[in-house]
Image 1 (cartoon, rainbow, N blue to C red):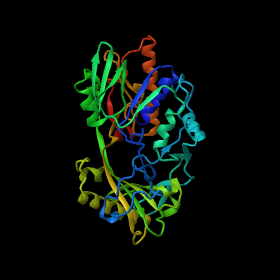
Image 2 (image 1 turned 90 degrees about the vertical axis):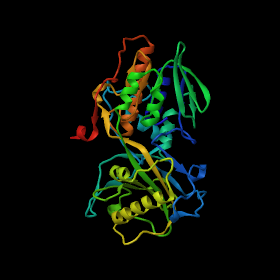
Image 3 (image 1 turned 30 degrees about the vertical axis):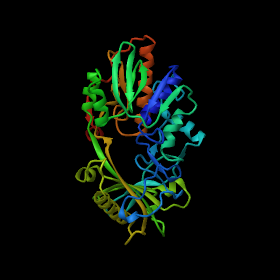
Image 4 (image 1 turned 90 degrees about the horizontal axis):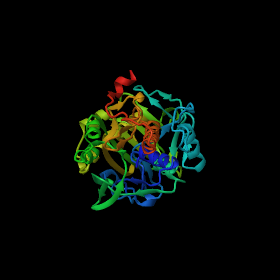
Length: 393
């Protein structure tokens, strides 16, 4: 139900597949790492840290994206660069459609940048886009206008069993139907636990090769004076700070005058401060919050920050891929014999919304080719996963 899964579902329907179901673990809708917390819908947790204790989560001004914060645009693709049968000829065209629908808007020019260790700001070239109702609205926009897609929220599929009729799925203690092909648009331990006993050993072995990093995220609302970054930046990557990787002004995205920030840690900090993500203690949350706030203070170049009125910390244990399938491998995987496919940014070349979207388009094209009786062989399943750091060199 993240970018790749929603992209695949929309493309499958656009290419004529009659029945498509999307199973997502989110309580409030699809999104995956396009995760948003909105007080107005009740998805914002009660204040967790002692610094924010007693603040009502019902404050409608509180809106946060607590994973992916924005995404970069793309140049229009060549005619052979994307799924031609889908309603989105390329990623640039998809962005234009989301903008027209009001789900996506461009960030102001010069809003995103890097702040060096000496405090000097540097703008990054855009354009950059964000979801106007939270990043989740980007995933929702992918499914809009596609009748015949069944979205099943708050459902963890924990069993897939091969039968003569197809793949029989179970989740949350219920039978979820029988399907011709299963697409795994997930990763980490949960995907591995699903695949291991399923009877799709090649896909399971492929997923086991994926390496993931963790990220701490702190959501913070301040009293008083607005927190500002140097150079007028509204979102900044840090250089040289011990815990903070990215700070993003949520009020600048959503408006309403809210003095709200999302603070994302470095992978190294998350690794050295990792705890069971299902059992984050008060002491863990307080320490992480203090560390990230201290780095935000240093990034902002001020002596002290305004008082905190709300805060919440979350550990994403499986946040970003550390290795990825090479781009020339096809952008997805397909095991023809087992009729199991997979998509995701890590299968499409590395961590980005565009790679995830393209991977979903690619897997839809592969599935339709198989269903139409075209000669479709295995795709990507034996391809090498290359370190993302090494691939960038």
